[in-house]
Image (cartoon, helix red, strand yellow):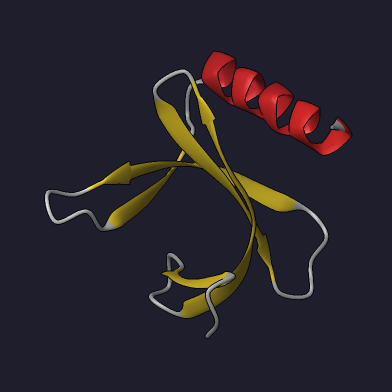
Length: 79
């Protein structure tokens, strides 16, 4: 695994490898876009950190937050 990939466990407990497409901030929240190997569409996830500074990835469940983060990512792509 290189620095541009991360491994996450799926709901079956199996490891899946994702390419890190982007990290970006929106207000005080950090987000990432992850693309599973062999796929074109990515996952937009919120990044929080535990007390040791390790990243914790979570799905954005609030539709308004998801839309705002997606718009911010799209504007990064157009720069």
